Length: 253
Image (cartoon, rainbow, N blue to C red; front, side, top):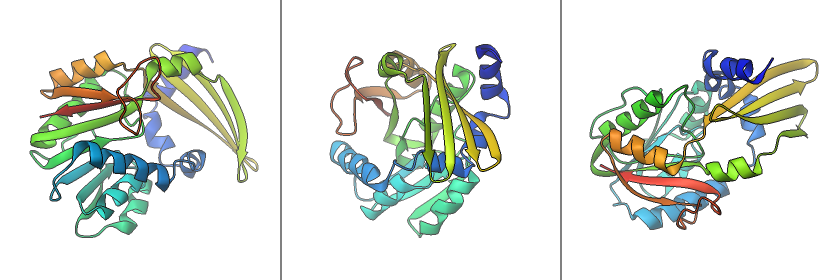
């Protein structure tokens, strides 16, 4: 199978994220993304944004809710939303009257003038086939924000990905063997993930568009939001394409 065939299968066969995010192998592969990392990000985010204590946050693509839970522990009302029913079911175990979790697609309606802050963390953007789908996401964010509300998108730094792409990896976690291949194809980073557990073998994909700061500025402008600034890491240092680990975008309504 050549690169174009792989890309086609990854990005159009019932959407790779619907299959991959609902498997336990996804959580096993990223087990190092622990609560301490989430707490560091959220603590620094609160210092940077200085939200009012009655603020309502939306954690968009919340996964199992580690960021949502820590935000809630700081006294804020939080709604977490994710496409993966398995992740939402796990997160729901921590729910209470000010911590809510729902299953939903970030491209579809989830309210109007409802949230003071919308967070989209850990490269949970750019999964779709074209930029119109990205614009749908940003437009729903704009709709769901209260006037004066803010959006924060935590994305990869394309320059660092292009310069430091590791083509292949093989390792074992618990009793699972992972073989991973990475390629840049048609403006997207494509990760092919082969998992072997005993006699069982499965194939998964990750496929993320390589969006740069100017791409986000255009999406933000077209969705009716106002671009404010960008950061380069979870301590909220200014963004540098050559040096930063992340591209973190802040916009407002």
